[in-house]
Length: 149
Image 1 (cartoon, rainbow, N blue to C red):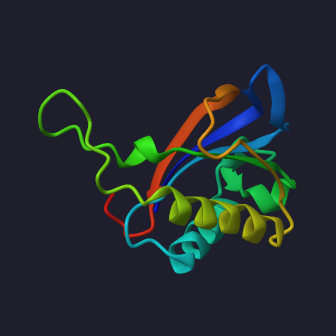
Image 2 (image 1 turned 180 degrees about the vertical axis):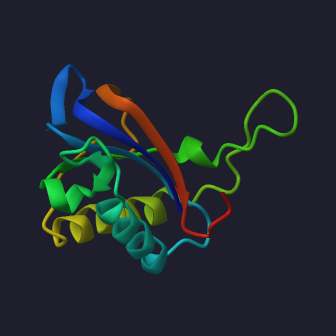
């Protein structure tokens, strides 16, 4: 399982001209679920994202976590994080989890993040979405539960 984490001042996701998820200060998480991923992978990423010290303290240093600032999280399912572009010109998504598995783990990620005391909003699984964000920093991080990068 992998995620792209962006520190944001605000973010929202729109599906069919309707805002389905919106947050203020916090993180936007693009979540990619791969073959063989399970709840342990999700738990690792949740623990990582809620405790990453990527928010500035009173001295301007990145010392505070999402929990520390009582920030919010917007989670967007994004199978394209498993796109393999090494061969040819069309990405291969063969290592992405099948939709029913991915959706179950996506919902688990959202629910388990809520249990961490984080206000969580989300996109709509398998929908065409428009994601709007104001990246603060910019701060963008890549995290992989298998620690591949």
